[in-house]
Image (cartoon, rainbow, N blue to C red; front, side, top):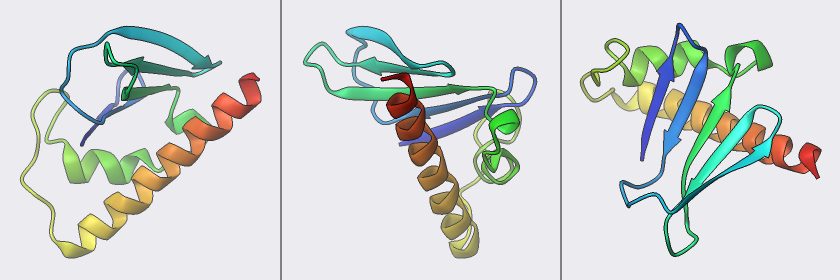
Length: 101
């Protein structure tokens, strides 16, 4: 799994695998998802992530050195914070998907 936060565009991108993209789908007002050709969830893109209260500062400092280059692996404390951030991102994506229904 790879988590990327793009500061200038305020987009949180969660890539679950590097499998080919089969289809993209808007699953909420601010949430897009991509699926493999087999229909398995491949990635989640959350637009306006910081504006919606996600802890993107934590994600940015732990996983990204800048907009395009990954930082070194975080230590154990940072990994725990990263897990919390990922859990928040997943909860937000689920909530957005439920709201869209």
